[in-house]
Image (cartoon, rainbow, N blue to C red):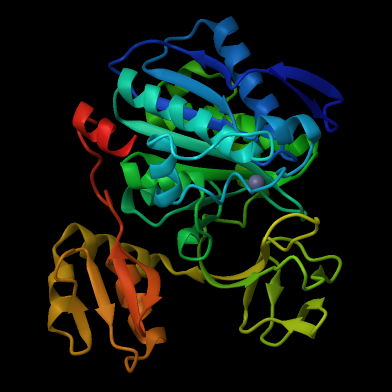
Length: 406
Ligand SMILES: [Zn+2]
């Protein structure tokens, strides 16, 4: 049990790991909602409770099942982002494998590992008991003023789902931020997206989360639009706050904040605000931190915890998104093999190594178009890996699959 407080709503709630569930029809989609993976972001907890309560009252036809899980219960109880480790940065496969094998000791000093182990067990049970299609949703809020937006790993399936919402979509966050829960889930096969509702502890963020959840249930096919009288209101609510039309952005740069650099953002930046090249954005003990290029500032950090100082993002034109979708559904990856300086891995055909003499700024967009992500630089070679389940979801998640990965 955990006591969660919303200052925005002047309310408290006592929650278990499973906040609630609705529906039971195993022939429909499975929607899994996470709330409060960052403990200072209680908005999602109150939003999902409200949606489940209304579903219970309304008695409308519902296909599939909705399951809501709490993220960092201890941190939610304390109103802090995390206790020792950021629970949304520790879902790397090595850590998950250790948890699966029972190799990570849970003790009082390792709060997040205990939280992660419990969440992992819940996810495993969901794959054992439910059926695809799966949609995983992670509800967040930001430390800066912000309109609501969506973050995704750039698979075509995530894109298509995310673009049904009248909100800006940020692609490819997994190239810059490692170990998020949604990246981990995405690699297993489901659609997995992050909803940022707005600023921490604002009532409007809770309302935005509620709107996102209803649109999710309709878009995934759990309920019919015409059965939700307030549907258009929810849709318009998000649309009115959005950037005039649906815009898609890619992340170009991240300032990684370290604990001892004395990072301080200049006051007053809002998410998506335009910035110029060399514009002064923040400072640390070495001096000024300036934007490396023209673009929009994204997730400027105005709290003490967190390792993302700020990002610079840039819009991707719809033309390129369409080209990319065409190339990925074809087999255009095969032409990469004939480009000098690009080598396919002998053990893993989904991985390519790039000779350091090739200009990365030209190569990277080609790999992105084709559905690859930059994974790491090893022995001087940059590696690009094809994102799994880009265009199709596994039809079944077999017992063998579950035993191997969960
Ligand atoms: Zn968060």
